[in-house]
Image 1 (spheres, rainbow, N blue to C red):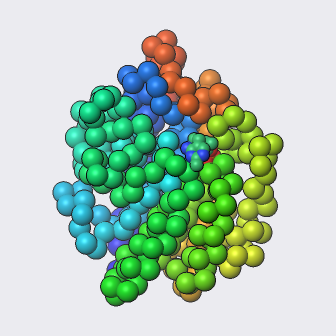
Image 2: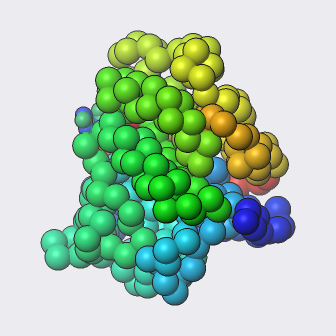
Length: 282
Ligand SMILES: Cc1ncc(C[n+]2csc(CCOP(=O)(O)OP(=O)(O)O)c2C)c(N)n1
């Protein structure tokens, strides 16, 4: 049922590097977009797409596939890069990011872009939708399928998240795995200052979730966390991925100002150089 792929550490490192390059490429080319959040979520989504999730790139609607929902839809540059690099959409499409008429809009459109399961961007909804899909899988007897949702730590200030968190546990949705990208920042400052969401582990435990806390840039910890999630029966799992917003680009790291600002041509050159020089463990 669970067919995790054995992917070498080098392959994960180079895939994640390419994804980071794609993120700064797309936002530079579009002269708009969100680089910070995608760069923090790159490493754990790389593991999901390269070694954890079941899918067929040639048949994105395959009825037995695992579901990936980027609940924090502003991180679309990351989703598009992942879909392009695994072969669901053409790599050339990345040049059209945020252009009028492109399938790759600033916030993802599930009708226009293959591989995008849910149109997101209005924060707060991803887990609710994922719960519905997970319940449908159960009704259909599809015991091998799983739902992976990625949320931001700012995003889960939305009240809808906590209703959904209650529901996943109430229905014992052990086929749901939520990853919270705990980068400590949101659009205009520190999550702790705007609306503190901590202590997250205690909150999820109180809501009857299985909790795994990791360094969200450490590939082994990420792989182990998703394997543990898949082996956990009777309750949903949340992976609290502690990350750095803007990871890999010196002048973006841990800066809220790079949430929704694109690198200009000069900044883009520095960003490419920084990413190319990232050494693992990073
Ligand atoms: C319902 C809703 N309210 C506000 C926004 C505007 N907004 C876009 S991104 C963002 C901050 C999100 O922070 P976080 O979830 O931590 O994302 P990350 O830092 O990982 O990029 C906000 C408030 C939105 N997209 N949807």
